[in-house]
Amino acid sequence: MADVPNKLNGLNYTEPDEQRRAKVSDLITLPADIAGTNCGNCMFFTPGNGFCRHAAVQLTVTQRMCCKFWKNAKQLNSWE
Image 1 (cartoon, one colour):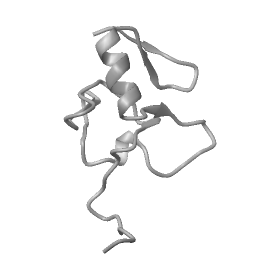
Image 2: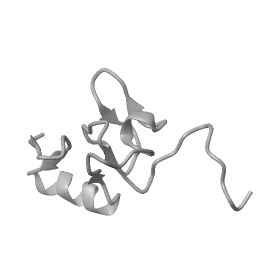
Image 3: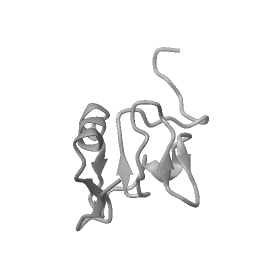
Image 4: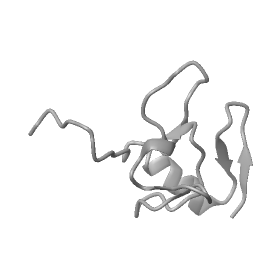
C-alpha cells in the first residue's frame, strides 16, 4: 500500500487498485474550513489505524477525508 499525505491532511494513493477504489467511492479530502461528515465520524472508520472497513473502499484514510459511503447510526434518511 502506497499512500502519500496531501496538502489538506488527507491521503493520495499511488497503486492502481487503490486509485480505482478511491475513484469508485468518490473518496475526497475536505478543505480545512469544511466541517461535518468525515471518515472520523463514519461507522466504517477504524480508530487507531485509520482504516475504512467499507467493502468498496478498504483503504487507510484520515479524519479529513470523506466518501459517498459515509454513514452514521445517528443520521436521518429523507426517504424513511
